[in-house]
Image 1 (tube, rainbow, N blue to C red):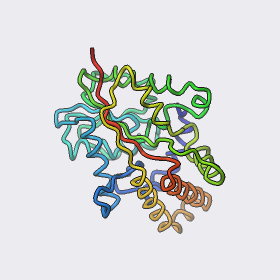
Image 2 (spheres, rainbow, N blue to C red):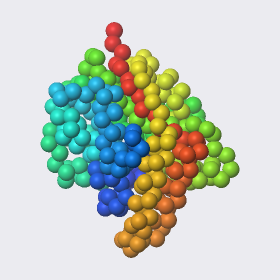
Image 3 (cartoon, rainbow, N blue to C red):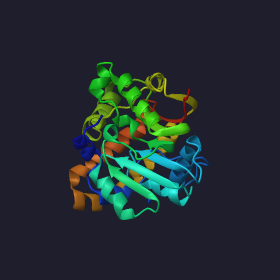
Image 4 (cartoon, one colour):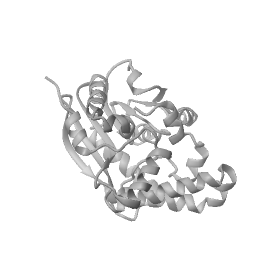
Length: 283
């Protein structure tokens, strides 16, 4: 699992910095451009709607959001899906404070490592968007321990839910193995922007869900993430002067390099995006 220090590197630059180039809801994950001509804001709503369907969310549901970011999905669950209760957990202090400031009705958030989380009562559905990349470290993956780590994550999610629950999971996945300049840039992004994180291989997820969850649906969205990161890059560059002035030249240059790398990695197939509909396995 990424440490709190790792998470602070990734998400703790400054909430106002991210606000300059993310969409209005502050969703820092792949959007779905289902028509192709949506705004980033519209495409992010498409993503939340898709994952709610994957998790079989209903207005009466109690829903857990594992790695809830700045609260975009919690807000969607309460405003658009009218859920009974939405609970988010995050390891980022900056994101936690931002969610408290949003005052989302029928939503609560806890600043906690998922391995230490203990819900008061079980949930009807689980959603996790872009957090799974932080579950196993690069070192655990290199040593072959990652599947056991992933399986423990799925065990915990099973224990937190009611019989019959569904889980909408979205994660970046590793695809084609990079070589040459692509390897250098992707390795730099992992080390300096997402320390402690690694994109899982899809076969590792398929192995790790057993015996707790069944993969019912798997959809990949590589081109959607290329378009999402391209839009983030366009917005970042549009605010170049402001970012350089308020946060420093190096922050702008690092994030420009990172987002250019993301666009390249998704366009050329080194990485992809997977969305899973998982059904809880019960005796």
